[in-house]
View 1 (cartoon, rainbow, N blue to C red):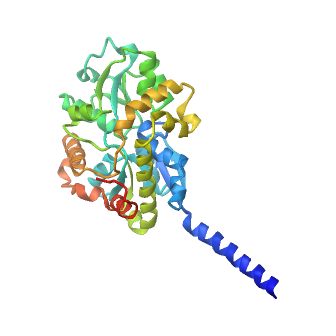
View 2 (view 1 turned 30 degrees about the horizontal axis):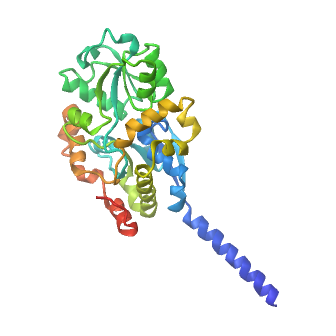
View 3 (view 1 turned 90 degrees about the horizontal axis):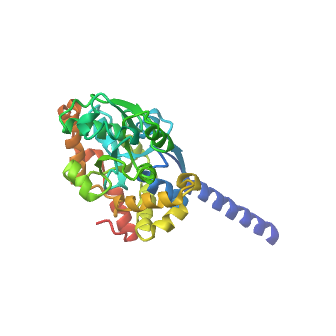
Length: 342
């Protein structure tokens, strides 16, 4: 009888542990707008560090060509959350699509407008891009928004350049090297990779640092974030909190470790064969990562101002930008773990 009770107890314990583990591991699919881009590193690194698992999530990362494709995946129901640029939340608000970011991991966008090495003599300024082919990650992505904003800021029609989707990684670098496009909006590590081969690479606009972002936008301008529909957030608060905790912990880890230690944790296929160039790009990018995960309200206002200037639809929509983000879940991380989220 004792043996039977012992076996029964062991079976019940095993069942409890199994069901408890299954219940803890909520499945979430995150669509990334270009996983090789350093702007999205915190999302990938969180998985490498096991932070999603620690938070009770089984996260599948789906790598797509650009932010617009990642957004389509969520709106179409094939993914739950976007790891992409916050500005989509503002742009879609004008179309009555309710999207909300819940953790910010890039305090600067890191977007760089670069001239193709084969067209350096033809293009001296942004005004010279009228009528030219300019690469973006994908039409409708944040790289495209950035280009249109710069064109208008320099007195040109936002549609005066021909937009070509070239992705963010090796395909974008190849298109620039071969001169298939005259210029491109790129992100690291691709910019640093090009500079490794072309030290005199011409940069027309840069938002990888506080100083450069201030020069372009007049203030901080949030970039990468986790965001999704408000409906999904309301029905999956546990998962949203877990994702936020994972990203905030990853940001803390980034700022407590060296670039070399960060690179060592990244997948080899993302780092690539030239580790020196990747490391150089990573060193350029680390200041871009948020220290807290929180949205700066002034940054959100800046995104709205930029889009209002470049899009009549956004300007007329009377958007309440405070509804496009929440700091609630980041604040909860601070309360439960004492994480610094000032």
